[in-house]
Length: 361
Image 1 (cartoon, rainbow, N blue to C red):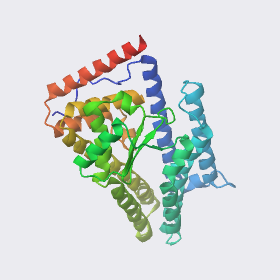
Image 2: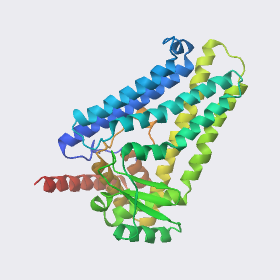
Image 3: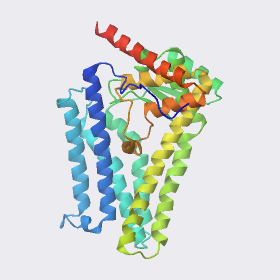
Image 4: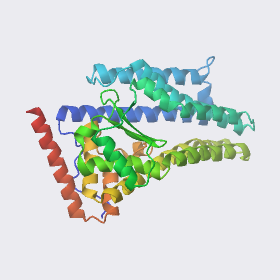
């Protein structure tokens, strides 16, 4: 399997207006998030920046500015792009300000205190961790969607069968109204999984099995526990580096601060993306149909309106790899020849285009 893929469509959204809107929207959401993250990094690295807004501390401006920017972006989604799937604008702006902006600010404060050999810095890091742990519940409140536990139906029965095949203890299965979330949802937490209602309509057979198997793989591989152990260890290592570092000249101090702040962030995102690759691999081994797995991923991107291509720099700050990277990883794991891989991509794209045409007619 070669490293490049020829003739890969730029997006699986074949309705042109939605394609352009979705691509623009996701692009500026990604880069605004990265810009706000880098503002916190600059606040930590550049002491003069922290004094620019005196007498009010700079973090007042960072938090307030983050909320305003998030609110305006969500308002633009609804008013300018006509996206009705953006309810509760103030709630969502508040959630996205608390996590990650405020949590990252607390981490930066903690690192700064530790660099001055003040043990109270660990308290700031602990508070940031509490906020991050509460982010899931806060997101549900901000998005306005509720988890509905299901106890029957075809998706429920199929999930239980797959869980038994994978030797996974599956306690609960939830459905989320697809119109509530901003994007199509599929997730695993604890020993439970959740799916958007539109999954049962857009995916069937082996494609649905792959999606469910992917979430079950997160449970079987204990990715949730791995995240809970690994990500705090990344920040603990950075905090210890702050505490024991020798005196540095201003020239080298900036580079040290950049590494301390960015290394745990990039390592955390890398860990999450690696978990997605592993879950894909386990799900493909389950269904033994890599073509259906690639088609399922394409359908998910199509349903959610996510462009298949991703900026390389933005990709470093994403929890999920882009579609081309995931599709190529599946093909490599299955030893799929290049010509067959491109045939699968082309035929999947054509099926989605025909489905859009019939839907329009």
